[in-house]
Amino acid sequence: MYACETRFNELYHKDPEGIAFCPYRICPIGAHSDHNLGKITGLAIDKGIHLAYRPKENGVVELCSLQFEKRAQWHIVSVPAQKQNDWADYLRGATWALSRKCQLHVGLCGVIEGSLPIGGLSSSAAVIISFLTALCKVNGIRLSQQEMIDVAYDAELNYVGVSVGKLDQSCEVLSKKNHLLYLDTKDGSYELIPQHPAMKPYRIAIFFSGLEHSLAGSKFNMRVDELRAGVYALQAFAGLDYGKFQEANARNVPREVYELYKHRLPAPWAKRCEHWYTEFERVEAGAEAWRRGDIEAYGKLSFQSGWSSIHNWESGAPEQIRLYEIMTQTDGIYGGRFSGAGFKGCCMALIEPSFEESIARYVTDHYLTSFPHLRDKYAVFFCDSADSAVL
Image (tube, rainbow, N blue to C red; front, top):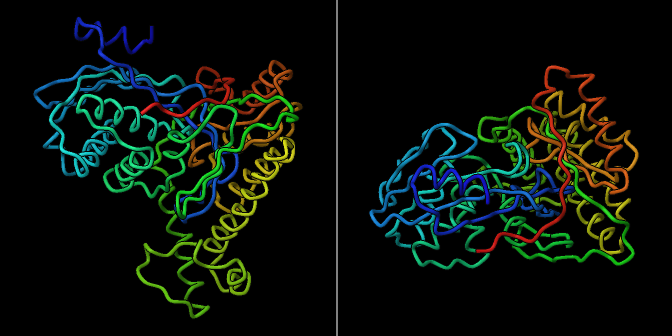
């Protein structure tokens, strides 16, 4: 029994009628690019968000979380027009976004449980999708995979106000165990590349820095705006047609234009563009490496992605940067990088399973030597790839 089920029974003296689940995701290559219509590679993992729930015929949504103290409540037809700046904003946004598409009649009461610490594993998207799955179920609504991705994206972008792309939602809705999701966010086309029979075995390590991560409160939106500003300027320098600032994206500006005019960009804008264009190339190379079963080549590209996130995207708290540095020096790690927006939270790595114990010991010892005050919050988890959410 999940902890959310036990807590639900304690609160309502009934068993839940359903358990909705959405996995977390990792993106070894393709970070900080989907918001400008880039390509990504990703995997869902066998940890995620569980939601124990029962329908409420009066239309009230009443939720509590095992990770946060405050209980949240609203009505399906009167979601607050503005976010309330608490953990439930993502779920209010999900209600708001779904109601724009479908007529809602039934609310729900529920308890949410996350199986890993918050930060860097797309927990916000996983919370939204698990909740949407439950809200659709009690209202007799069936969304396609693409509709679920779009509604979850709408909630986070237009209600919560985070300048996300569709990486997180796509990984959590489209993934398949032991397949690499290779997605083009420009048109939503994707391929699930199976694990090659000759590929060396791998598992996924999650190193939680001990710093909790808030996407909306981070520098994420500013970095996206800096990239757009660089792209907007490149379009002007090259005499290309351009419209509104928010419509500018790197996918519509060829790499050759960037190379020709990058010296005219302010340094921060040029760095954001450098990351986007090189990450695009790393994703394409990574997909081919996975296709031929070369996880070592794929891992090296993931390490390069992490380096670019530090030096070109300029993300990462000192704790995350130190974790990344330690990972690059650890035997048995094929590759890895920050996970998520990359200002707090965690790092992920693809590892050789036989090194699991030595990896945990080496990374932990070196990290806590640098940050001993985080001993009680730092944690290591080992996971496997998994199937996507069941809608």
